[in-house]
Image 1: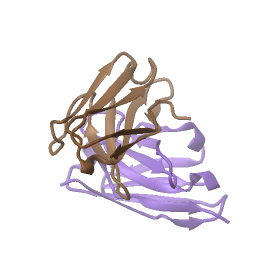
Image 2 (image 1 turned 180 degrees about the horizontal axis):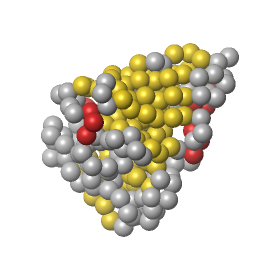
Image 3 (image 1 turned 90 degrees about the vertical axis):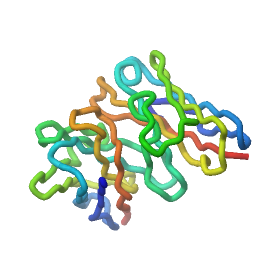
Image 4 (image 1 turned 60 degrees about the horizontal axis):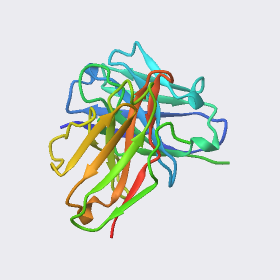
Length: 121
Length: 110
């Protein structure tokens, strides 16, 4: 079955960097587009970034453009989110998610359990 | 302020029918499929309805989705206590070139 396991969360100071990873298993990772979605404490879901199955296309929400970079290593079935110049408002649980089918649809279908990122001085 | 608009709360008694609305624009709901997610307290979101009205396996048929123009709706019939959760609509936005979510609707079973 589809398994997505996030790691790399933690407490970091404003302005610093952090790299999240998502280990995928139970499916052919290199066939599916992937996304990161976050949820600030007590708030709603917020789409962060998405990447095509081959890594050729990537997309970001405006507030993270130029600071976050999504990437994937298909040989290791792993998705990454490199976050730099972190802000207090980036504090959230970050979820890794896979699309439903092996063509771009633009929405998450399967979700991981999330990893908490806390940006605080 | 979310791009997609949902009511912040909804409620019903066991057995009742509840409808949750989601309003968007021509660049998101008007052009792309709508998806609905259920988030039980303390857990990750789970897909409830995909591509406007498709129920993944395991989702009961008392749950349904529909779309018309730039709006969508989620209907839960025969309400049960286990339906108490947060519900989110989502779609791809062609203008923003990104995903957009509604602000979420907290469903309370009275």
